[in-house]
Image (cartoon, rainbow, N blue to C red):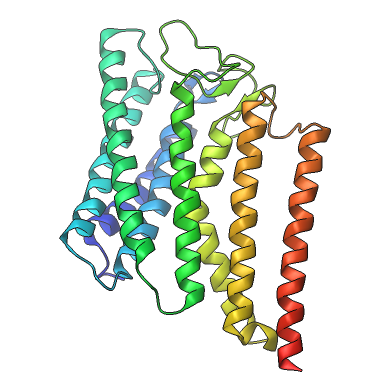
Length: 302
């Protein structure tokens, strides 16, 4: 593990430690912004970057044809991530919004700098993802787990760009160059900790769900491997592969469903009948796919 991409591993450790410091500040500093403690936002980013960079360090360590380009893309992720967290924390310390804020000259320059770090992050993520996707891992299950996780997470990261494109239903506050919400103004009632709107659509929800496919799908594959010690059907690579493909397709479908819901100005926790019907259809398709995979595996065992 120490031999993995060292800048990414150091960044992961730094973000994990900083998350604890920010947690103390959340408790100790009574200031709020839009009704949420000001240090919650930077803490969300440090936790997310800790998971993100640790996962990328592992992924780059799996490359069979690892080269200098891969190493530099990983390092670019670190530099961009450090810059973004530093700017978010700086604005939090000032009690100011970090994203989209152009209220003053300093706020505007900080937002431009953040845009640059986000651009570098997305480009480095895309290039590194392409290198890893074309590689084969130890087996087909690992290969497709990584590929599907990278595809969904890359699209999830890119979906953050919708916050600054002015999608229908968005209301940008004065002196702001973007918004999280659709159908309502930013800053209204939100879910605890994450702050996602409970009265309108919120593009942060699909952005979050999509980007963390990179962690959750590999965890699902590891769970299947662990369960294979107890269930003979899961000892077949073909069965685990099919289940991973079903999980990847389901996760991608869930991301698209949540994105569609947000773009329609609908709160994540208040889906309408159409959204619920789509969710039910997705769940039914996932269950059918899993049952077919397991039944075929049992037939082979028998």
